[in-house]
Length: 213
Image (cartoon, rainbow, N blue to C red; front, top):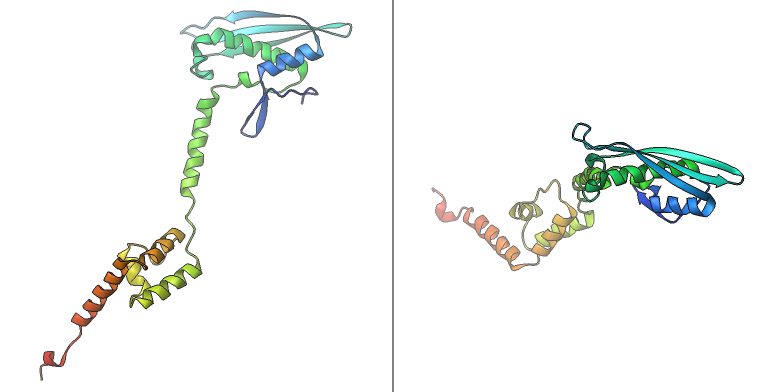
């Protein structure tokens, strides 16, 4: 944990990461910066996966003491986003300087040291969406079910007949289903359904003329 503070941070998944710019600002404000030096110790080639490695040394004067802090940074197309991919060497140098300065200041991981944040976050976003989809819709309230029973009965229907007509599982009525049914029972279509059911009942009854004796 660093004793220094900076507003130049990025919050990611609940954690704060200091930006290279903020780290540089803190170093300038709190130390007599005598100089930086960087050395490219590995050029990016196809054989090494286009990975560049740089070493950086930060020299400061702290009171009467001259102190040096070093850091190693690497970068490759797989550890940076698409915009940075053409600038692998510069990113390796930036990461090396960032590590050297965070050893000096006591900060944790520098934001620029992270990999392709956009790529790494995609699976998590997808997972969050999957979890949201799996959330079960709320069930209908008892008040909704009672109203459906009452309104259906007023039309001469049973609630079961209405659910069947609307292709709703009567054993698992959701809140949205119940709202749909309540609205339906106020329509002319519901009245027509009631008439059909009544006609069907009448046609199924036996009159005296149908008796064999």
